[in-house]
Length: 285
Image 1 (cartoon, rainbow, N blue to C red):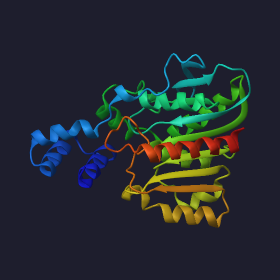
Image 2 (cartoon, one colour):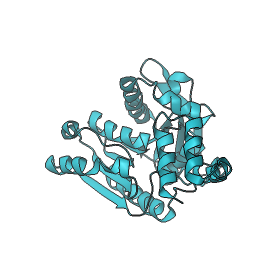
Image 3 (cartoon, rainbow, N blue to C red):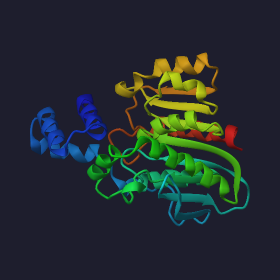
């Protein structure tokens, strides 16, 4: 697919571009509104393909929970192995679409790998993630950044209270959640492992605060996000912070999201996930 089309869709999903304006620009790129509507299903996520770990998997204990946030109850999806044993806790942080079927499946993947997975809903201050994705994206601009950060930091506190927790915490975030994973590494000195998939980098002045090991995954074609890589990596090196950084050539932004048909890159996603689980094994066991 024309890279300009994918770049336009990324602009639509990350910036205040209305659906009407997006479709108008898409029609110009494709030649007509009819062509634009034919391309649209190849761009938008399809949650019919969201399940890779069944919701009735006998090895897992799955439930919707709430935990104390910053002045409110935070909604979250909790996935745990049924087997007894102490385990690390991993926060699974969604994209700017909210807590959707895909992220719930990612949480189950983490639990299937042997960890306690907690996927908070950042839109809990508004009652939770709405079904309409455009509505969900619009709500992210209304979040209070400090309250949101505290809400996720308190997710670690809640996770440590679970009876099977071994007291070690990590996180994995995607896009908006990848940027937040970087922020959690800065603001939680007890965090052991932070994994960020194609997330915006923090200010370099904040990097010295990181105590966690950091693993970073980027799509080679993700020009906007990738602009911040050199400065972030230099700061990590300068301050001797343990990190791993991978760029997957030919991969788009959101290459790990298997419900996004045009941007999903199976080979890159598989390798990145193998590296993520190895990273958690090293730091959370």
